[in-house]
Image 1 (cartoon, rainbow, N blue to C red):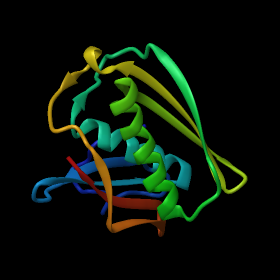
Image 2: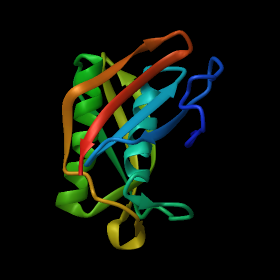
Image 3: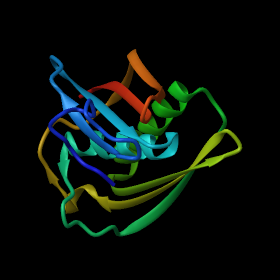
Length: 151
């Protein structure tokens, strides 16, 4: 999966994926892009994690599967990020790798996770997904999304 790029996806080519954080007062604003909706959603999770933790070189200690029912693209983005926040708060789990596949309009997600004690915390831990200016949609190169996360 891709990582942070300097152009924010503006000069990307078809099939490329990546993500970045953008300045936003008091919160975390992330953007992600990929060739398909499912990879874009996975990139959004990685972007959110990178805003508060360095998972470089961290090996997962468990693999969890999550099934999100059919919903609008915006709702899937919010639900997936909310699930990651819930697992962080309830179980102390941080995703170090993510895979998502379409499933009857919904989403099947594989989260390779490590314990929060096993990662370096580098920023404010997210607590909620904001609906204001949340977007998930197709674009000329595939899919892109943007969301603000309260920290």
